[in-house]
Length: 396
Image (cartoon, rainbow, N blue to C red; front, side):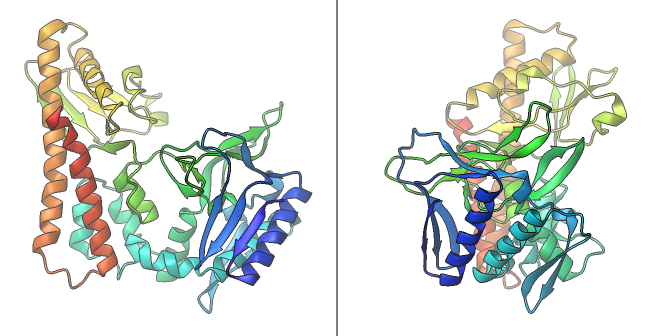
């Protein structure tokens, strides 16, 4: 079993019980890692070299409780759970109870209440509108209709804790992640891996060892790709390790060709016999955009990710070129295509910079007495980070 270093004896005891439960049910915990509880912070540390990619944790399905199988309430500002029916495996009930005990012992709900943007007083309506100019989901995420403050608090807290991409018997499950939950996010780290039997049945989740250097001790995992705005809205922090920034909704006129609409609403793929995707975008975006071309040559992209890592920015221009080629029926090529692509890219970058720049200035000039200090500094960090990263394109 792994080591435990903790300033909280009760948390140590709970962690030990959780380890025993995972091992009893066929899981794996790397013996060299160290679970750390320090000032209510949970993390996993390792003495292994950064190049080591051994399995750090394997948490079997028997220890992965499904979020929707439990009623979750607040009692005296602590999380309380109860199974919705008796068919839920006993091991999953035990795992969830131990996880909740750890959350309560380390005051995770208080930490979430302080840091999550939608719970900061909450955010003023005009700030939500400002965020919504880039991400239209901001309003429903930060001010969900028809929910009590307690429901919103619990839903937003567990949204940052469960993994919703697990499929079992054809159904998508939202599973909580005992132990894996303690590993912080880094977009450059290795992602979760699902373990499956030969039959295809889901067996559990694997996390491999990843550190950013030999000298560091903390282990990280890539939760899943999101741009800084989406990470802020869903998780309450600015992800400075992000690999891309999602463009604001934007329409760019391509001379003598048509209009390129970015981040405009498109029908759901299942409602449109699956809209086509562009292979050219696969190098810059983990989620390739769906596209729609009308008879006039106007093209709509469901979204566009702007790569911001130095070795990835080169992929944006070919993707824009490909979009313009599709708009022209593949008639454009050579210098004219290059000129139009460069012009479109400049417009794309400048408009996105303008958004982050204006948003930052707006925060500087408004009376922010209705914002907590934490909310204001996080919002400023978000817009400043996006502006700095996008400005790389103007220098190249």
